[in-house]
Figure 1: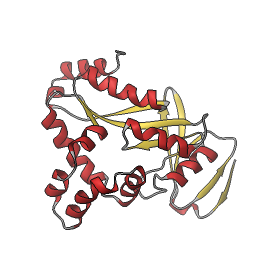
Figure 2: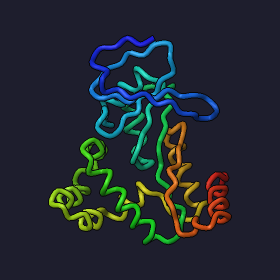
Figure 3: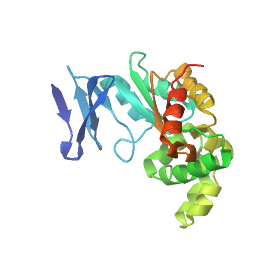
Figure 4: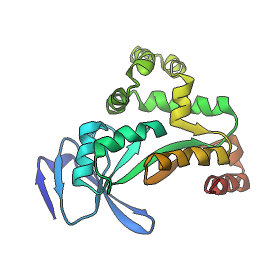
Length: 213
């Protein structure tokens, strides 16, 4: 079922349920897989393959789809152009902090962004998306070991673009923007808020996130 060229010693296979169907996820490092007769999604993240144009093109050509991570709705078009396959199942993991406490949401956002986007593969992805200059101060602070300064150096608009926040209804509308841009399967990465400490309130927030506007 799989023709391979390269060394598969660094490959990891995950099996997950999505929509009642078992999905095979292959996470590989520096490996080109030619996949036939199996439904496969290449998970392109971390230091496995990275998330840049050539890897997205590989996903569009060789797999059933691509899973995107850490991007804004207006970044989707560039990624779809790279995938270059209208039939591909393009999935996006979207960070959502459903609270109207803007400072709280941005605080979490700065911590997550400075932690993730300083990883070389994510840094390269955002360079490719055109954020190299606006994120340069964050990288410089991180490189000298000043984690607080790295978070503070992230522009507010970048935080707001990459970590959605607001009321559940406002967040739902922002998630819809990804679908409108061409993401076939939006996946919400739900971030905790103080209000969600109460189980009933947390359940209500989740329900409201799923409602169409």
